[in-house]
Length: 398
Image (cartoon, rainbow, N blue to C red; front, side, top):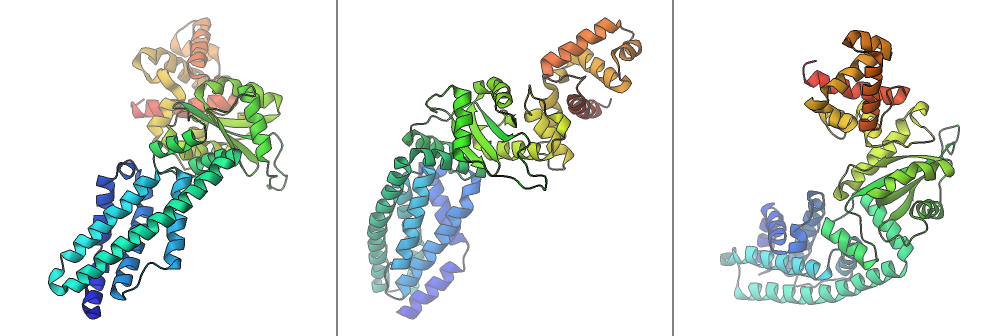
């Protein structure tokens, strides 16, 4: 009898389709898992493979779920509580997985006896009862701990966002709701650091969460943080804010002698991308890119990523991010004025090249500044405009 079960076990574990069948079934039948982004499926597959192996091993040996198994199931439950995946969805996923495993064993019924089938059914029922009780307790304990330490929980939520550790937007919203926070649909991510805060040898001094929350309080007027989050990342503060807060950032940073980068063009499921862009911009921006009356933005960050050889989007998209409406045909005259100014070095020379009055060129350059929020007379901003117009005009064939 045991030898027959062992042959079936080996056959099932050698077949990669077993794990895929479990994952496909869970994805199709459990709504919370249907909404998961692709980055979470390696984890689901790993758990499915481990659970199949343990259950089949216990079936072969007439064993039962042991203490080591329960510790791992409790850890999984705690992780799901932290990322906001509903407990009922998690337990349903295990029931679906157990049914798939039973069906796969049943497909090999000619090799087994009725006693073998009964042993598997009894094991699965007992295992589901035990792990449901243990996982419910672990999930509840983790949820209570996270809710009890709200400030720490809010920090962990943003930590998970910037690290890309999230199940889905639905799970994030549910997790935030339990903590009394509504994540802004349109947001800006600010990564900031004290001016001169870096050591001369390239090291840095870590800042405290209190410093980040103080910066946040200065931005929202000491509000309730109902739509904002703050955390720290080494020597930098990281703040997730409603997009409307972006205009207030330069003034607050100037008053606190900080500098930073604000990313506002990424969706909520790409906070990790936004953080990587902002942190990379602060790492690589030359000193003259920073001004006391402005912060680095998406355009600066994308240009710097391109120069560093790590673009997040295509060059054509970078051109559009920097130039905005200037890429439209209706604004071609402004793009031509910008190009002539960059190529010749002055408004007068550009006017001669374009056969325009110098005042007309200066007016067009002011329109470029208004549309792009980039001043062609500023060395760094002129460089970003130059790179962007080179990309766009190169794509048009000149």
